[in-house]
Length: 250
Image (tube, rainbow, N blue to C red; front, side, top):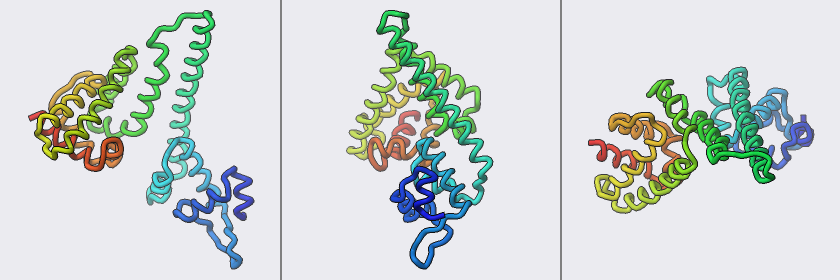
């Protein structure tokens, strides 16, 4: 199948297909003497996988890593994608319901509590967190702990929901200030660690210094955790936060 035919079949532009070829994400099985790209059935199946992952908001480099992994299994991938899409549909259904209810409230047809206004967004936070970190957290803390954490999040009031987001922004700002000093034991670094503790307390059923230290260690051992703080605060932020927490829990 030529590139224009695949573009028509899939809805992916020829420009995008060429780019996928350039980055090694979707390399056509054959290049003709005239330079035309020829895509096999296996290439078409791979493109389908790419589009599934794109719908789930994965980055192209992440998708390439998944598909090129020696242990990649199409059937297992499809099952995982199905589960993730079901979660996404559940979130969208909840969001649609919230919008409909809000319209009815505005038109005086029904009442709606402040907690109900944010229910869909809190469910999305839980789903995103579980997709990104659920496996690692379950392995370290167990299913009971993670369910208790999600239950606590679902029961947040509107004020608590705002507070947890404000706390995280304060943490980012204080961590950035602390990094300037370069001293993970400095007062401003301890303030950052304290903010992190307060932020965790919104999610954890019970806080302990040992669990806090364990989470800090996990931040360093998984690139997704590392990227979370490094992208929002600056390179090296995760390492610095880890060091500050270790000083804080002594």
